[in-house]
Image 1 (cartoon, rainbow over the protein chains, first blue to last red):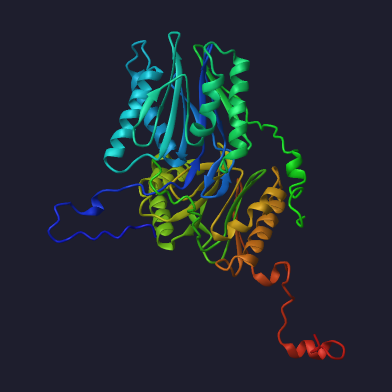
Image 2: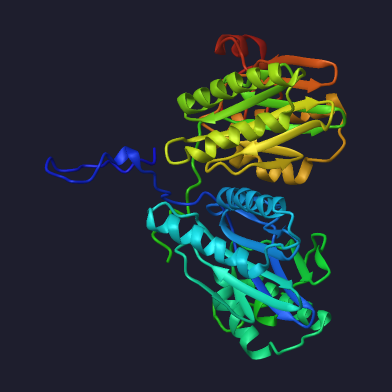
Length: 245
Length: 224
């Protein structure tokens, strides 16, 4: 099983270890989420894969969900923890609506709430094993932020989780600019997702792109990207290697 | 930030379990290394894999809760409720449990549904689900041969074939194939002993004794 045998010395001041739980490692995981600000709001992309170790086990996992009226949450990492976070947020939004005061939680507030949750769990050595991307628009103001499983949070014009940080962000740093049109934003995200598809072994070729604007949130149906493999070096890999075939 | 994640946690669990929807209900199937369809309520069954103790205790608790829920509700529980109860237990005790479950049932609101609850406590609704150590050998088979909208008999034959294929290759699965069909009409349990299943690659027709072979066939059967 997955117990770490605890051996406390007799004179230890720690309480019984069975009192506290700790998440040791994730089981079913989602890979990168990439998001950027564009003219009318936020665009976010994530594939629909739920990996189980090296097996690409689940291929229809929706890793982006609307939160309230103004926000969109994308998650990578352990899917069961993401499902639990959605339940927490459900409750948060419910209580917010029950005030019935005309106000509603915006993306900045939701992001802050998530940051507190993630950081506090980290302090208890029982993290929610996710990297989250929270984007939204409220009263014309666009917001895009991210929180990691240890509570590191920041906002930016474009963010990504996991491999996206290494593969997608450099592309975004070069090519992102203010007031991208919807089409340019989608093309830019697809460029990032294609690179991830080529290079991230946990990525699958089935993704969704979500958009959130002042009007609300829409999420595309699942679709696949075309890829190119007809390089001569692939077709004739042994060109230069004398004696191989 | 990645604190030594056990990313290759493809945990082997000694059985093969399958759940499949068809047009009208669900079919659950398993080998006999597990007691297949554990009854949760009249119309909802669960396939268990992993630690026998863990999966039993989770099923027992859920049966207990569902029973109370049914009394309060005044009608049969739905498969969604059963699945969510299993998820609650699996998720909140994730550090201590090692069990992967497949919940299948039929209710009047949503018809036949299959829910997979793997290690960790993720709840995922699917048209079909596979689990247990034997399932590793079935991903390719399902990718190729599964289709939506099968009839009851097609679905059952499909499940039997799948479990049988898994038994052929997985050392931890074996014995017989058991199926449970759940639909609006009720529940049907079936049993397929191995000698009734078709033979796969490199498997031979079982004989009573070598002597039968020697007697029946032509000269020199001992010559290979």
